[in-house]
Image 1 (cartoon, rainbow, N blue to C red):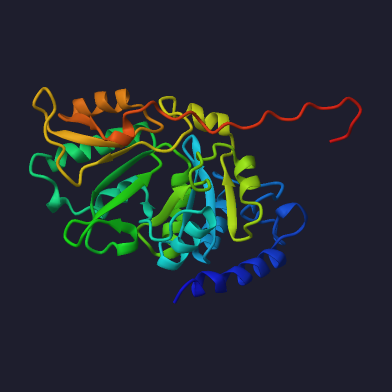
Image 2: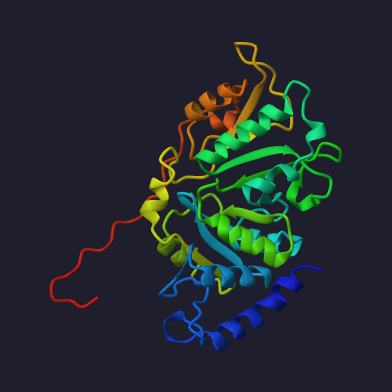
Length: 312
């Protein structure tokens, strides 16, 4: 089938934008459109009309770059064709398993809890999830529920794992995710960093819009106040989301506690995650890729100095 569905929706979405959008990005009835890369007036999380429009565009096959705690994520339908199209656009390998996202309350339903290693108590893992999502965004890789498709999972049949990343309970992006899930009738969506391959995720909407300005099927849904979004998550830095795996055993820690594996040290530090894990009876083992220092946020060039007398 290729990208037929994704390609076919692009022109109707553009036509609808042209019909509904007037000067300044407002619809004919005063309804703001979901922001297109490089468009002025951009759509923001918390604006019900803009969130609804972004959810409609996502249903039609667009990808939405949206505020996600202290950074920006790119979310789209989880169809194989759309996932492949996003991978091509961002330079990621097309066969790479896609990550999924949903609202925190729906997250446990994406895992097959019957396949947890025997030494990892289900109740304690779920309690750990709850505390980490109370703090902010986090990622978990665990045994995949059977209904998840192969392009969103990894590993052999019977041992497939899924990578689930959610924004945390206090992020306004939950409103957009709810709207997109309702609009598509899905229980999960595809998610990746709002960046090109091998680049750090964006944490400013204007820079994300500049990066994707040549992609007419990408929409931007910015934080209403990016500084406030970062202050809402004081323990997280604006880098990729930290991730724990529990699809396989990591043995036991020095104190004899069952161990979870930190696959990626990202926005929440390994030290903070270790202390939270200990509260729930787990040790934390760092995978090789998580043993280095946390990455620094994506650097941006400072704004050009204004010239006296020159009109911007």
